[in-house]
Each structure stands twice: as C-alpha cells, then as structure tokens.
Image (cartoon, rainbow, N blue to C red; front, side, top):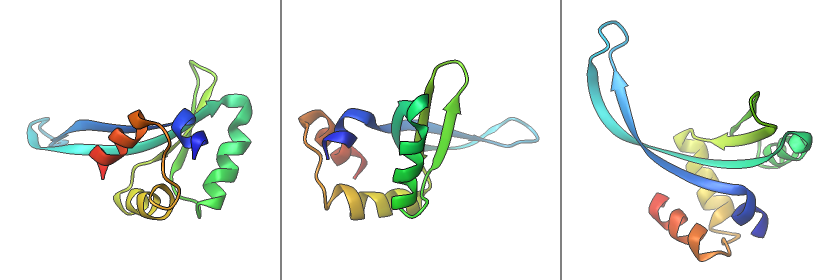
Length: 104
C-alpha cells in the first residue's frame, strides 16, 4: 500500500453547519475525508483507481495547480474504503498508520 502512503492523506476537520436563510450556526461536527492526489497529467490513473473501487469518491481538478484528487468523503463510501482496502492492505508508514487510527 506504499502508493497510498505517498499519494494519499486523511483529513479530519471541524464542520460548522449554518442555516442557509439566516446564516446562524445550527451545529458543529467533525468531517472526515480521504484524498488521493496526483499530478493532473496522471488523472487517468485516478479514474482507473476510482473504477477499481467501484466508483467511490469524487475526482476534483484544481485549476490553480496542476493536481487532481479523488476525494472519498461520503460516510458509507469512506467506511467501505477503510474496511475493504485499508484494513486488507495495511498502510506502511507510521505517520499514515497513526492518521488512519484517528479516523478509524
């Protein structure tokens, strides 16, 4: 799973929910994402990986930098990815393992 260790990252962040009409904060939460990023010229590799994973995630292209990411952020998709990929093919670096354990 060295590819994921090098090109992937876990994102855990505070989430603020606001009422769209009033702008008032209605609740707080925690967001969890997994991103795999490559140079824009390698976007087909990301699409191939997304296809092998059953279409989970959303591929984003960044216009201000030559990058593309497959972001897995829907709860069901993220849980499937954790259980069927990262628990089956463990991460290699201590840094990524520690981040994975926080998300898990």
